[in-house]
Length: 418
Image (cartoon, rainbow, N blue to C red; front, side, top):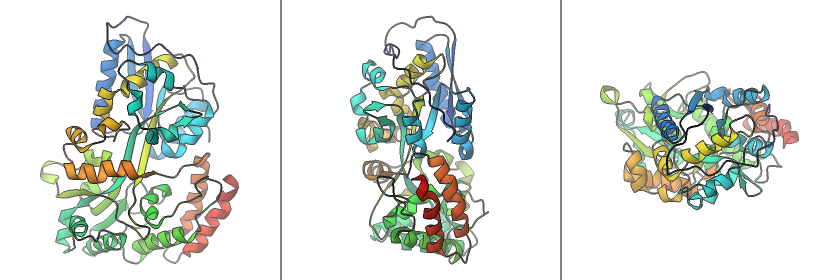
């Protein structure tokens, strides 16, 4: 990691004055890096920033959209070069590096003292990744379960059973899901897409392999389990879906479910905003991940927001984060990013900000997924581990690959890093 340690400031500002008159102050320009350039996301964040500016005249917040594929590298390069943002989105996979680096400002005292913040409403499960020694260093603004968006039009045109029909029959499992995808692929369309995987971001395959009870390393992070039987079986299943049945597009194929080109995609509900509207709309559904040999399961992708403890605007950055994550604004964020607040984790509340999703989808996919899910795999030094494992896994994405041999080579390479 390029991340350099910086001393987190202990003396934070006075609690955010949620109520009361705004006070004039010197001009402060906050910059927050994010990986979304979605217009709806940016409009919401800018609206929240405008509300903060009304309470703090002279304060502006700019949202700096960085490409997702190189987000962490770009962010850590900025930090190392002395150009750290005031706040940043942080991936769950790199949470340990940022939280333990000393680069982030502590948040607990300010959050707890902010009038109307209700810190006790933020669940301990949601904040576990973002704490060290009891101190909160980032706020988990998005705790989003992976699920499958479904194009029922392509599936019914291919003569296959829809996932909803499989669920009703008690037959929603990975074997049937891949059969559906393969049937659609036989028509010339595409079957199943693991969004953002692109044969590079291998950790997103956890949305499949967790159905086999597989993980890349032991719970304490010290032992590589890539070559364990569960992972070998799961990866063999994925390999067959790519190279034998064609249920999943192969390397180099760039397919987007949201343009109507695929039957199903595994992604998070924040992508619902990409669903086409009007004449280009199709009959879609949102369903839980299929069960695997290990039974039912759920996988969560999580993102936090931290305020950096270097620079001249640390106090104001922490105040803005308290404002951004207060109950009122958490409800706004819930339109796209499933919340960490227990009071918002119900279909009725989520439905007011997610009108595209039915109460049943919200309850069965979102609420159940957050309640029961396990976060994507992460590890200290994850950036380096991810790159080394990705390079070794390149050999897996060939039709004649020896799956067990490739996974053994992954363990041989990453074990010294664990």
